[in-house]
Amino acid sequence: MRPERKSMPRIATLLLVAWACACSAASSHDSLQSIAQWAYPQAAPGKPTHHAPDEIIRVSDSRRTFRYKDLFGPDSGATDWFPDSHPPLPPIVAHGSVPGTESCGGCHGVNGEGVPATAALAGLPRAYMLEQINAFRRGLRGARAPESATFMAREAKAVDNHDIAQAVDYFSRLAFKPNVSVVESAWVPRTRWRDYVLEADAGGQREPIGQRIIEMPVHPADFEHYDTHAGFIAYVPPGSIRRGARLANVGSGSVLACASCHGDHLQGLGTAPPLAGRSPTYIARELLLFASGQRDSLNAAPMRQEAEQLTLEEAISAAAFAASLGGEARAEK
Ligand code: HEC
Ligand code: HEC
Image (tube, rainbow, N blue to C red; front, top):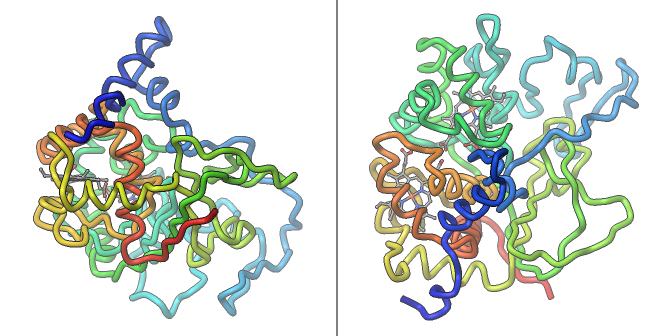
């Protein structure tokens, strides 16, 4: 074991302390929020309403246009800025199916590239996705997690098996294209949540990163109009990528090398899904959920054991390294 690990509490211990401090109001939800608020996207304070319904909306990298009301209206379905970039969309991916279901594409993107608040589905193995949907339905994933991490359970219960099969077939066949650049930086823009994504404060102030990942859209206006091609920038603490590479390839003490299960370059192997190039906020959130028992299906057991050994710094480092694979990574002074 490396000496510096001894002085740092594991996530599991931090959660216990947070739980004990919260006393009567204690819940797994509050403890997770208190140790890593940045990993649990929140709605506040909501979308601005300064657009006229017929205003024409464009994004930088598509020739299509939409009227504002067609993007955000009650029947708008998932926005498709790049219809030539994917096979035909199954109905459940494009606009939902029976009442109570929402379109998969609305939350995960029609190309399955995902956003930090949801998950990238493109290229995930079919069997893995079905197993996760089953876990969501049975209350074995995210049932007592902070708000946004519970949305999928509602959807999984509302959608029938026929639609799930179509959606999972569709997403598993898409090639995953990383859309995040990982940047090591001691200072980051001061941010707040708006509509489940971090937004920089208008004044341009900066603050120390601390033990956080700060992931933001590169073009916030395009993101607001559901263009997930526009990409994300994820600030991580200096040294994270090097520390994460070591964890991924060698391990540390009782922490096994991530690659021993997730495969070379974390491209996925057997029941362990691919991690390379995926959102570091998502990866870190899942490590916290495993460590707090919020991912508790049979297949999750080895991963739960692994996550319980990690310190928060290690979880951030592993997430930063995994996300940097296949994407762009650099260090800022
Ligand atoms: C209302 C938003 C929403 C909708 C609609 C939605 N999802 Fe999700 N989904 C999420 C969120 C949020 C997560 C991540 C939960 C977490 O943080 O653990 C997720 C996670 C998943 C995962 C797990 C991914 C992984 O890597 O483990 C799968 C699989 C999935 N969704 C499939 C689907 C399918 C298929 C549909 C359409 C039938 C769908 N989702 C519709 C919000 C949504
Ligand atoms: C002993 C094998 C094993 C090791 C070692 C391991 N994992 Fe996993 N991991 C798994 C399995 C199996 C799953 C799928 C769990 C499930 O089905 O819920 C998983 C799932 C995950 C997920 C969820 C991915 C998603 O799409 O939701 C993340 C994130 C993750 N692992 C990160 C890591 C990191 C980081 C390390 C190294 C610090 C690591 N894993 C080491 C076996 C392992």
